[in-house]
Every structure is written in structure tokens, then in C-alpha cells.
Image (cartoon, rainbow, N blue to C red; front, side, top):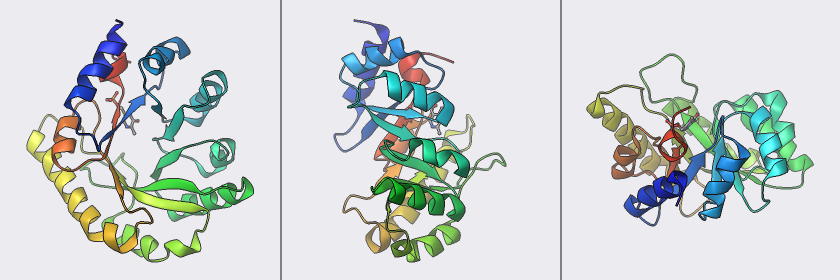
Length: 217
Ligand SMILES: *Cc1c(COP(=O)(O)O)cnc(C)c1O
């Protein structure tokens, strides 16, 4: 067995059945992605459109591609026809553009609203109040399905801080999921290589893991 195979396996063994593992493939080769694919992995995440397009074109079509990084509005049109879910909808302008491009492709694209929870200036996302306001008008966006929330914790060794940030997002998720989400099982995308175990303990339903599967970048 390859180490990619081993790594996937050991993470999956530790995951509750309701948590989806998204294998994050940024900077990784098609050969490496295929190793994960051949081990049964089908959900993959990319954070850049320029990297996603050639991978989508070259790799098996039953891969579910998740766009997880900051997305510029002018790039939405390149992925609208095939993207499985966009985790990083961080502004109303972007939500409008996804809606428009999804309509053009005659589909409904599942999206998550990215919520700002970190103590860092570099992270994108809505505040809780902004997200609530957009959720209250979700019926205006008929070609997107708001399927839950996404968040990234502060990049820190302070586990308590990370846990508190995930807790606050989970609490907000509880508050809005029954009121606003279109799906009965509203998703909560949180957790990466360094913090997915904490995220799962705090209620994550989707973890986005790159380096713990494919090695460091
Ligand atoms: C790169 C990335 C990940 C995965 O990061 P790792 O530390 O390699 O697991 C998760 N989410 C987003 C948004 C990313 O850009």
C-alpha cells in the first residue's frame, strides 16, 4: 500500500460515519490524486480555479470537486458546469455570481457560506449577522442551494482557542440550520490537517485535509 492509501485509511478509521473527508489536492500531481482515487476517495478539494480546471479535465468524471478557497467572481463561470460544492462563498456579490452562472448552466449549485471566526486579518468570510441577513433572503438565489456553513480557525498552536472558534461556529450553525438551510442535514465544513480532530469533536460534518494525506507542500 502507498502512504497516501495508508494516510487516507487511518483518517477514515477515526471519522464518524456522518463526516465527509475531502482530500485537498492543491499543488499535488494527477498521479498522487489517482492514488487516492484508487483507494476509493471521491471527494476532492481545490482552492484555485486555475489548478482545478486541468485536474477536472484529466481525472475521472465521478470525482466530486469541492472549491474550498477564496473565489474571484470572474472565475465562477469556468467551474459552474461541474463543481460539486463551493465552500467559500464569502460575499453577497459572489453568491449572486454563482447564482447567475448556475442558471446559465441550468443547474442548482450547493454552496456553503464561509463565516469569519479567526483572530486573523487574512481570512475571508461573513460575520454572523451578515450571514443571517443573507440567509433570510436565500429564496432570491434560486440556482444556489445554501447547504451549510464553512469556517477556518486561527492558525495557532493554542488548541483551546481553535476549539472555542469551532464551538462558536457550531453554535451559530445550530441557530440557523433549522431556520434557513435548504438541506435537512445542514453541513458544517471545518477542520484541516492540524485541527480536524478538534473540529469533529465540535460538530464538523466535512473536513478538508491536504498535507496529512498527501504530505507537506
Ligand atoms: C489548503 C487548505 C486546506 C487543507 O490544508 P492542510 O493543512 O494541508 O490539511 C483546507 N482548507 C482550505 C480552505 C485550504 O486552502
